[in-house]
Image (cartoon, rainbow, N blue to C red; front, side, top):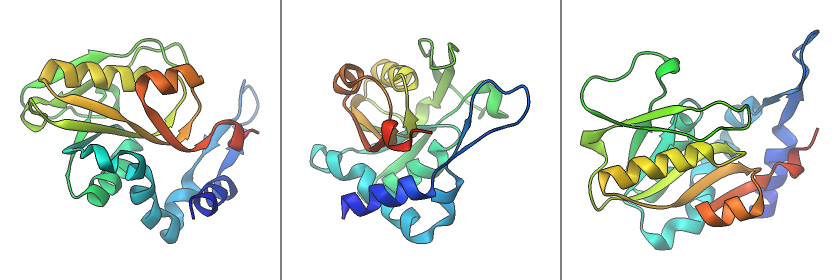
Length: 183
């Protein structure tokens, strides 16, 4: 069943050439969101490796995480906390806990924030995102967890594309690898 899901993820994924002047292809996972059967299976598949750890909340970064996080949270029967990025629109009102990621795959440092009222001491956090290439955002979210007294249990992702030692250190589990989606 997991192999069938992985095959479908690969089948619906595309690399797109953005045109003249582009230095690289751009990933297109929109096929994943269009397939109702795949969409229904993503949440349960993402959380399966972490279910026994009994997460109490799912935290996901903008933007795609806002789709995957609620799917994972629903599969676990727990709540969802959005991790906001200043460049993705208006930040929520109220106290926020911030962290800055180490450099990511584009050599950017990403600022992330969660509403303090939604991440509590003692929470057992599952981080969910679509793609983990360097683990930079996962590290920032773990830092926010530590600042709030919450325990990060690991990270569930559709695509795990980071070095194996980073995946092991951050407890990243994925449904497919970057090599599975190679252009």
